Image 1 (cartoon, rainbow, N blue to C red):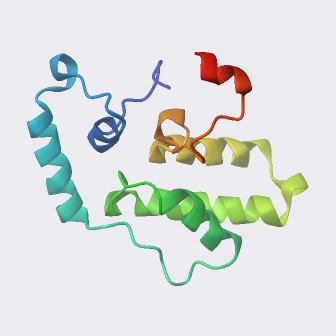
Image 2: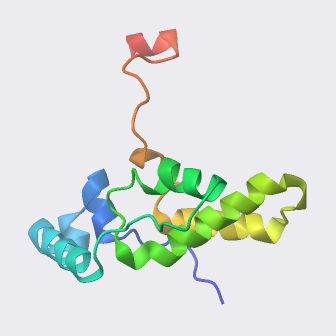
Image 3: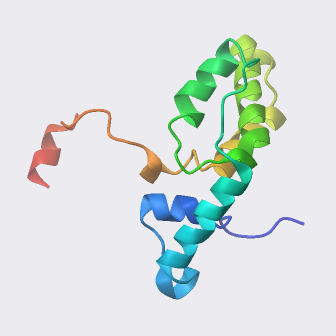
Length: 132
């Protein structure tokens, strides 16, 4: 049976986004040490050489700019990129189940949180934003 509520964020993602809460997650230094230990244990997340086409461009667009990912998420990252390639190849044949899988991989990799996105340019597109 599925668990209710949002899935807990990985410690590395909490540190990157600045949402680490000492009372809930423990000391920030301990979390930093745990993240560094895990990163050295699993190694960096490197792009596989055999990834080609739309899967390769998906890796460059979404996986490469995510500094919180390490080698432990390699399988999920590859599966997400392959699903993206499949979606780009035949969007009308991409079933609802595969959409659900792709969304789940994105959530697992921390790609769906808007706080992780960098601003494209310094100026806002909305002119009313300069007053707020």
